[in-house]
Length: 414
Image (cartoon, helix red, strand yellow):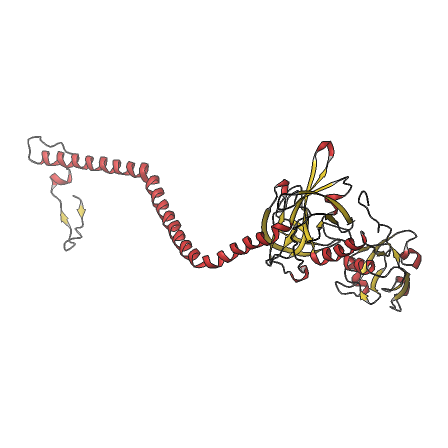
């Protein structure tokens, strides 16, 4: 006999009837009443197992679809909620966004009449093309030196469609600036702004004729200021650039970069790489406006020179001399028989002061030198040299200021 515990009653053991105990091992008489009940039970059990198997199969087959539908529904609900939130928020922001749109429209209306396309004969009959901006209603136009350099003739297409000849009043390769003159009436001039007032992140607009598509306007921000010598972009001590992300392409050269007041804060000059990659450069108006006045008056930039290769002070030398960062300019090389060479300045010297101006940056020092009166005597203060290290005495050198040998008109026909 087998003992089972009935957990639904008192829990006392009881004896199972022999017919039940050997139920699955004894063949019962088909004529007994238990046989039909047992067969029906087995059949129902088999049907239930088959049904369960079928349901499981359906779940396996349909499961991914059901789960996918559920996930999609969740994602759809999230997207719909995002759309609802964005719709409501944009509605509240619309007045401010309208102000920005209006600013762009007004800038186009203010500056586009002053922007011109510049054409020049090219190789194999091709026509070179650039941009420029009218800065004086008498017909004076500012553009890049590289747009007009070596041109035998120049044509300017004005904003109203007129195409007129232009002459080069002055040009300067060192700053990549040129001034043209056209004889035309009813010209509208753009206003100069102050690039020194710009901050990184300020809004700017670039205008010009990229690939000959005149009246093009793009929009961006000031990405960086004072890209000077020593940067990856330029080593010229006379060049300085604003960096922006405004879309500028071939043909934009010479066109204006303007601020939110529609004032010229730069002259678009270059891009990083063969085509626009989000990095473009403009000559700041603080430099361009100054050179424009000189080019218009003289035809060239009459600058003084020292005859050195100014560089940033190497860190090791800076530490040895005890100089703070931003103090001093390193003499990387000397022009043989130039003013510095004749005055006794040597490669490896560190210039601390030029007359009354501290030397803090190669480009700023070069500008200070260039602006010195030609023929005057300048006092140059150098950091202590190795032989004077014990005394830690600065070295004073006097230099006769001379005209830069490149201070000539370099454009054909000038």
